[in-house]
View: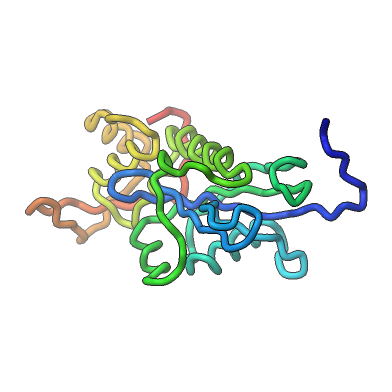
Length: 226
């Protein structure tokens, strides 16, 4: 039988952020060890309460929480979904507005420095998460893989400039693909005009210099899947 919640019950309202990056060729999520009950000592998604007196909306909550707990600013973030109900939090009926955030690893490590308690964990190894955080994480990875197939979303895991090899490798990681055909991938990039060369900038890769590129637009969505 479902618990009946009185009309005057104070609901728990939070924003939870699935912060994804790439570590050692794997998609990884930022987790924080909970210091208080419920689930003290367990690793959880980065999140926090909505401050009604300060936050204009849950977008502001998510941005504030990430800044406070990681020191990170200027990252890509988009609303994922809303998770709610009487059973997701043992303290009572709760609602969480979940977000997907993407950032290059170098920006995140610089923001974290030597402090903080954010652990970057491969998504396949992020187990035993509290609340419904496993469900939220699965939804975020699903969003990245589905939307990434028809957009430049995976490039948000890279620095502003990147080589074509780095871009292809990142797409493979983001989409969970074992391999993307190199010639087909680069042909579609050209056909869809998704990236542009950065004149005068090259990267050293294996003793050779490789042209650096950047996105033509912040996020491009297209009809054909890569």
